[in-house]
Amino acid sequence: MVLTSWATVLFLAFATVRAGPVKTPFSLNRRSDGFPYPLDEVDKLEEDLLPKYEAYLAKKNGTHGCTLENAARRQEWHDMTVAHREEYIAAVLCLQSKPPKADQAKYPGVMNRYDDFVLTHETQAMHLHSTPHLFPAHRLYIWAFEKALREECGYTGWQPYWNWGRTASDPANSALFNGNMSSMGGNGAKSNYAGVPTTGFKAPYDKIPADVGGGCVTDGPFKNMTISLGPLGTVLPDVPKNPRADGFGANPRCLRRDVNKYAAAMTTANYTYALITEASSVDQFQKNMLGMPEKNDWGVHMAGHYTIGGDPGGDFFSSPGDPVFWFHHGMVDRIWWIWQMQDPDTRMNVLPDTPPVDDFVDLNWTADRAQTWDLNDSVGGNAGAFCYIYV
Ligand SMILES: *[C@@H]1O[C@H](CO)[C@@H](O)[C@H](O)[C@H]1NC(C)=O
Ligand SMILES: *[C@@H]1O[C@H](CO)[C@@H](O)[C@H](O)[C@H]1NC(C)=O
Ligand SMILES: *[C@@H]1O[C@H](CO)[C@@H](O)[C@H](O)[C@H]1NC(C)=O
Ligand SMILES: *[C@@H]1O[C@H](CO)[C@@H](O)[C@H](O)[C@H]1NC(C)=O
Ligand SMILES: *[C@@H]1O[C@H](CO)[C@@H](O)[C@H](O)[C@H]1NC(C)=O
Ligand SMILES: *[C@@H]1O[C@H](CO)[C@@H](O)[C@H](O)[C@H]1NC(C)=O
Ligand SMILES: [Cu+2]
Image 1 (cartoon, rainbow, N blue to C red):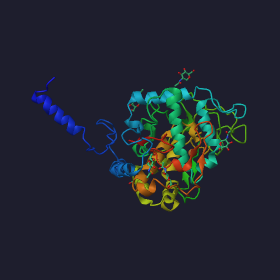
Image 2: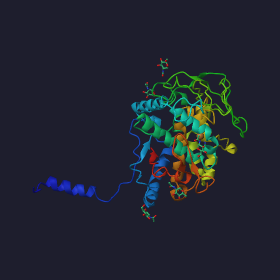
Image 3: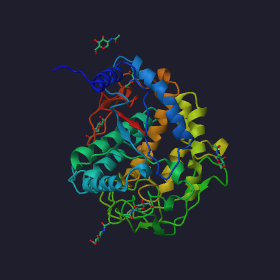
Image 4: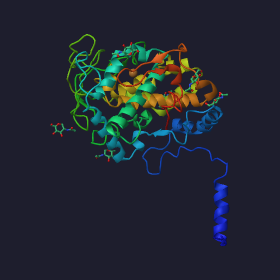
């Protein structure tokens, strides 16, 4: 066959040019017009830093085949379609209906597969939250949860995250907490909750005041959810104590929340932006995230946890029992990544308090043991099992 038409010749010439080695810069292309929230200063910083990160990845001798283009894209809840949000919710409910892997004779509070994750957070609380592990172990933990949703419950998307700043002015009325069937459940009913003390802060910041909730969540997809493990720490006055001192006993009760605008006020984008741009070492970054009494800043980590509050959301040990936990720690993971991207050559290769080279994280029933020093990069880390970005 002889190709003669001009159209064919032009097409072939064009195709050759398009297939050439010139690579267009990676773009997040994350939101189409019509989504309710404009990009904030943190979103913009993230976009501006991507070329730097891309150059770093290009210099690395391979990332186990993971690239920005083929990485999974974790989305912000409000950027997901309603159908996609409902698919996520269905997968979480599915996990709550599957049998656990942990031995129920040893851990009677474990009712289902979801509880395996809560149990891991309780049994390993000190390890997971020690200085070197907070970031890498939670990175692994969220990834393992996402993997369970996909592999055990057929979820086709990725773990959503919660950009706190978007909901900070009125969290209870956001698409995350408004209580309809495509939200993560509503606020708790009114209760005698008195707020939580914030040790180390001067009045009036020595306490997160109670908002209007604190009681049982009465609407949305998790209104029938049974919380069983914990609590181990102090939460709300009317929450029954766990029958066992280790918190592993069965303590069936409702999901309680105090969706809290006072805590949320310290999660606006300017707080997150300052946190990401002002700390030059990873130790300082983590420290600032956990609270700066000298600046009357509770830190976005604590402020985000207490925007949910209640039980088990307000319990240090069993907080993952509130399904919004994963969204909150997703955002923590995201801003660690954005902090890293400002100087990838050094920041992708450091962890707080420099753990020993053979250090590992073992999440027992929920993930394979991983080398701590292989969890510092979400693109290609964990022997290539990590391959995701936040969009
Ligand atoms: C790059 O990776 C290849 C294949 O994994 C390996 O054989 C080679 O030694 C690596 N080179 C360097 C400089 O690390
Ligand atoms: C729940 O609220 C969000 C935000 O207003 C809305 O986009 C969504 O369609 C609602 N879902 C249902 C099931 O009403
Ligand atoms: C909660 O349980 C009641 C009673 O079994 C049931 O009618 C209702 O549909 C359930 N609601 C949800 C959101 O699961
Ligand atoms: C963020 O903005 C609020 C409201 O303007 C302000 O009160 C707060 O001090 C700012 N925080 C930081 C860290 O800049
Ligand atoms: C994490 O940092 C260590 C130590 O600097 C480095 O050897 C390793 O390659 C990094 N891991 C990833 C996944 O980038
Ligand atoms: C969980 O992992 C830790 C660390 O490897 C280990 O010491 C512990 O025995 C494990 N617990 C269970 C119940 O498997
Ligand atoms: Cu934790």
